[in-house]
Image (cartoon, rainbow over all chains, first blue to last red; front, top):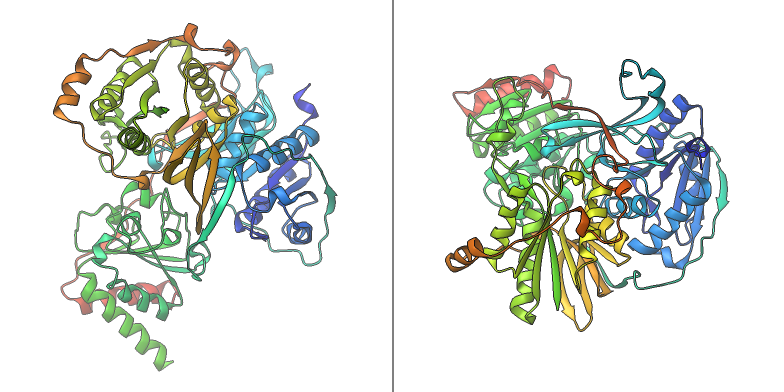
Length: 349
Length: 261
């Protein structure tokens, strides 16, 4: 079958506990741009059980059409029924582009599905564009240059290099996209999408695993990816108790506390507060890096912040290479005084 | 019980990243190490050896020098090392890599395949699940705990805000997180034996049920359009205040200037 039969920009609309994940809206925002360039439409693929009601939200964030696969097998994420559902949708509807969030779910679902439908998959993309491949025509072979290709840009080598990748000869062009990078659109209240139910049929086999238990982390903390101000601490904070200093500062600023991997590894803070390559990508208005040395893996998750303020005792700490304002000093003295001063300023207003 | 561990030799990007004077990455100056997630997977397999007498085979695909990571694995306690190397396999993306490794594994008996979640050079996390897909076996990614019960494996599968306890029928593929364990060190006796140990080397002809069109650079659906070393945002101001009070005034000044407060 010809590649030209594949049409439209599709988004895997991830939901957990029947709540659409933020990444799904981010992907829809990007999909709208790509579909605009290609003059095609945006379709969200919603998999789950009793999830049909969620279709309106996807419409408000930019989906023209929502394909719903609703089945009890899809109630809680498992690789096999989800891969079967998404691969069946791809084989039936033939999308030109299929975007999946680079989440703990998407980074399992994406590779399984791409191998099943025999196409390429580019992981953890931070930029997506429509363009030519090769980027520049090869002299004498101008006719071989392909247009309207999905150009997928991603970091590699722990964020030290960036590569732009195309998938010129297979369809769909698949990418997983890092959460927190693409912008969602302002929701269009009352927008409606064409909703279509699809039933691929599920026959459990050796690849269906059994969920014996779901253990949720006890945390009612808001997502650090949504915070306008983050007060982030590293190993230099010294102890879990000492994070109180950062929490006080975050409170007076109306922000939230986040942390580096070292802090999670030490068991001081839960994983969902971790910023960096193996944690979350954040881009707040202000990022305080306190007692964080600034390993490349950490920087990869926060360097897009509007303003970075670093406090560290070690004046050679690599965090100072990316900070807008770096303060060499003792966080134990500076942070409490900063909190007091901001409190006083607030009270005076 | 037979366990296959897939490992990759990678440049060490953790901490020891070296740059050339022009700011590009100096790959030659970086150490080649066993990928950390893979090493955790190997340790998990060695614990199954300690507990159940599992036979542990370590497999890698790469240049001939990748045999170094197999010797390291043998020195840690693995039983057998297999190197898949062939010029036609070079330049493979994750599809072609997983096709190759699956083709090699089809020659072997196994109850469990363990890979690392992701390698620190590519960071894709794709090859493990794709090997499972090619072999038609269940995959459990992001494992933070592995237990065996009869012919089943019980795994804690990590997600952002929770974990699932999953039970899968073996044979099964698991991708390991570094958090899974602290890998053991090589033993002096192990190192001695590993130097003398024979590494099995396989080439294209040894891959089972694999078509040429799915191998190497030519068989890779994804193509690199452009690659460049990342240009980082330059450093801003750095101050060394005389006192905490000066530091606080400086920060408050900047926050005011930027209309944050």
